[in-house]
Length: 271
Image (tube, helix red, strand yellow):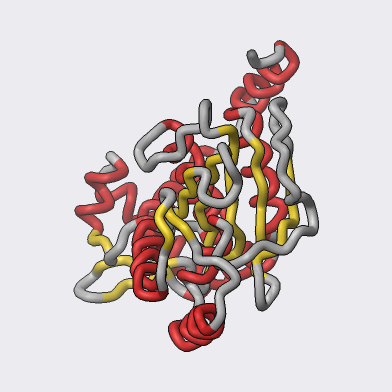
């Protein structure tokens, strides 16, 4: 429920007098920014519901300030000032607080144990841990290092490593494994594990169905950075009896929406 104080603040913010022409100019700039290709005056006019004559004045001003430029037969796209503005914004974005905030919101929405892991160069490292009201009997906590083979988050990181580094880790492990990785109760030999890692990369999702923590299900999804590399992995876990982590089910949809939304906040777009 939204508090009366918050509602009043929102109404006050909305009712404040702004500069209408500036808001229209920013709408024009946003439309050009969101388009995958340069737009003509006619296309912009239709999308923004502005007359061509009125719109043209805004395009002239944005061009003078070098936020847009004409290319390809009088089509408009972003120019150097937009790039400068975007780079300045990116430099000010700290991805981890954004990821932690997303994990907290997921935790509140599901009342499941939620964690955030990063890659420390060799293994995943838990950097955020939020217990559910049904505390799980696990020996993983803040600061724990996870296995790339025996954790859902670890398999996601492993799946997205450069091919040579990924192969080195897998080949070294299978020279003398202490135990074989499992998926849905089935042991994975080396060939099967490579296939599983390939599917994990394709799906950007890793699910454990009590495979290593008895009666506990786990699902993990990645957050990416601008380089297309995994910034972090958010995982959700709970008792198998009440935590359905199958793809397409509610918890998977919530987790995937969380990580995709976090990636968009960090990168300005979904990857």
